[in-house]
Length: 341
Picture 1 (cartoon, helix red, strand yellow):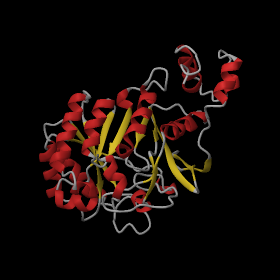
Picture 2 (cartoon, helix red, strand yellow; picture 1 turned 45 degrees about the vertical axis):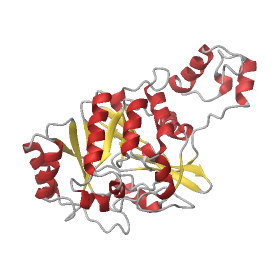
Picture 3 (cartoon, one colour; picture 1 turned 90 degrees about the horizontal axis):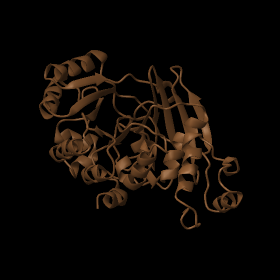
Picture 4 (cartoon, helix red, strand yellow; picture 1 turned 90 degrees about the vertical axis):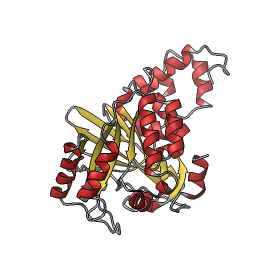
């Protein structure tokens, strides 16, 4: 854009420093840009944070914003403060087409991908409230790798020294298992990778994560190990929602351990967070503990995620937003088919 205006490349660096380094979105405040250039930019760019439809704060300090996505639709973004860590969970789509039955977002269906600007706008919103972020995770609404180009560009801005300057280990992209996109991501970025596994068995995972019917576990894990090698990751995080009587048996724990032992892997056990009509129940704490012990005894690092923000429906799997003109199918219909091409 600056080249088209006859400007030198350093003008782009100046503008990035204003936007990301100083969180300034007012062109008139960018005083080291000429008045003429500022007027030209005003006709070409918009630098607004997303409109906030609602803001809720949990008793444990978690904040959830409901953000305007246009057309009567909304997405949700969550800030999770912890000691020594400050994490923002961003959305990448309006809804989600993957249709995992234990996830409230999947029940909403899918409308569209978010743009890079809409993704980064969520980060800017948190910054505008004085929040100093240490981590950003693409674990909000949507399947990030089904919106790979916009997500990869957003990740670049998060990592860039002239952007938010985050370490690549502090930016995590999550996926339900879009194998071609995992391989493509390795060509575009070296961010941390999290995989929503939820079962070590293909028959059960076909039901819990329907994309598994297209890319079964063996194929998915092969792509994960290759990504870890190319991106020089210490490990890939495998998310595992603990569903009572469904995937929480000792037999499944042993099977999971066999899949991951001696691999660059760690397991994040997630207590199920209920939502209306889910049909699932949370595994008892002692069941989760025993599952974790099986993994640890086998040499697979595992931890249990502490539930945060569930009193405002901001916990894992509870984000719903507002989705119109929905697409719902076990494999996400045309949107997923396009993403897999």
